[in-house]
Amino acid sequence: MFDSLRWMLIKHDSAPGSLIYAGERRDFVPFIERCSYSRDTVSEACLVPGESITLEPDRVNLVLVVGIHDADTIRRVGSELNFPALALEDVMNAGQRPKFAWADDDTGFIVLKNMEMDEERLKSEQVSLFWRDNLVTVFLEREDDLLDGVLGRIRKGKGRIRGEGGAYLMAAILDVLVDCNMVTLTRFSELAETLEAELDRKTTDDLLGRLYELKREVILMRNQLLPVREIFKALIGEDADIPEVVMAFLRDTAGHHEQVVDNVTALHDILKSMIDYQISLIGMRTNRVMQFLTVIATIFIPLTFIAGVYGMNFEYMPELSWRYGYAFALGIMALTAGAMLFYFVRKRFL
Image (cartoon, rainbow, N blue to C red):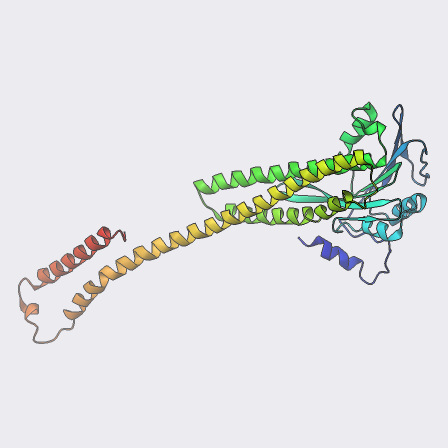
């Protein structure tokens, strides 16, 4: 749950700006891809290890770095593209809190989380992004299809992406991340509905455990989404040096993110209510059992008293020598028990 705290121990006593990877173990070799495009042309290249990153000055350049666990690769990319060491340190810290900052006067830096549901668990991947007028650099923890939609639009020339600059590409990537998180939240919501239906049929320890685990994952997702509000607030603020045409798309994406935050907060409240409801049901069932046992014990109290009186074996007890004494005692007990049972049923104690 607290992976970021555990990974921070790896960086303990390190100097600021130290490029130390803090995250899950990765065993693949990082690689770099470059996509340069203008309104009319697109060129792509997969760089071999050690090859320099060549940018086309008259085009928008998308540099995709897959794998943040190798310090040499991150250091080389930062050196060639002139990224500050403090920002690169955050890139290699997979537990970094989502943030936005200006790396320098011309370069923005964003850290976000791409979240997916994997076997009822939240799987979070860090996405770090630098952008300038004609350059967007994305760092991913592992290879996946996150940016396939954006790359497909670039290759096919669909929409406005080929005619705009790096800021528009940055906004398109943020929109993809928000949409992915919305899909993940939808799957968690469907799981919550399934658990609710199963709990209505029968409450089991396994279902209650799954419900608790789901609530925990939703809390983790909410905690990753809330800081992103600050990012969009800074991006669409008055001080942000972003073209107005891009600003409109950022405002729309910010609205979608607010919807995700509202929904994850609502889902968290619903799960909390479901847990409270199940606890109340368990308490009510326990109370019914205790009420039933109390009624049975109350019925037997006078019967025990009668049996105790006639079990004292005093010498002078007329009923002991009476022929019908035994039947009389049993009759008194039955009459007393029947009367009390009738009273409890009438009062709906049973």
